[in-house]
Image (cartoon, rainbow, N blue to C red; front, side, top):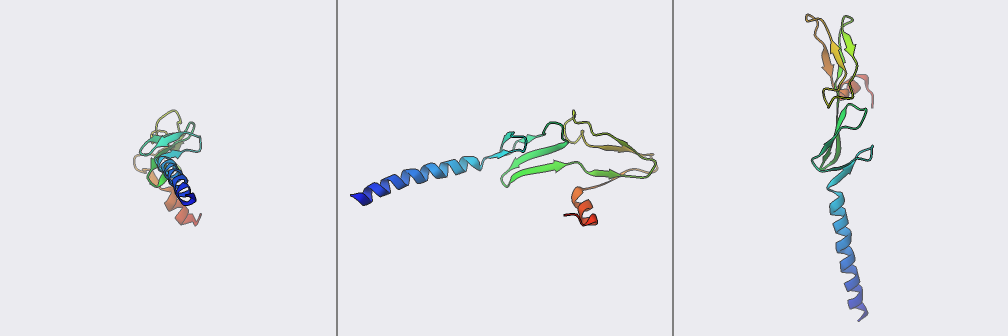
Length: 113
């Protein structure tokens, strides 16, 4: 009789526990405590980046880093605009267009980890 009671208690506990984990797999929590469902995106306040909840976790898209000649003018990032319109811009003469580099490429070039 003791064996039957032990099995009866173990099975309902296991089912409840796995149900909780499958629910957690469907959400992501951003660093500003915003809760996202898988597939949803979020732009945190006063930041120019886009967070997306994916099946692998939270993914972040950030702005490319512009660079150009001394004749180029940097325009400030505008956090009131949605991503990527909020990104830092650079305006250069037509004969010397700006170039962009991803953060990962910059880190590779500078050997920053």
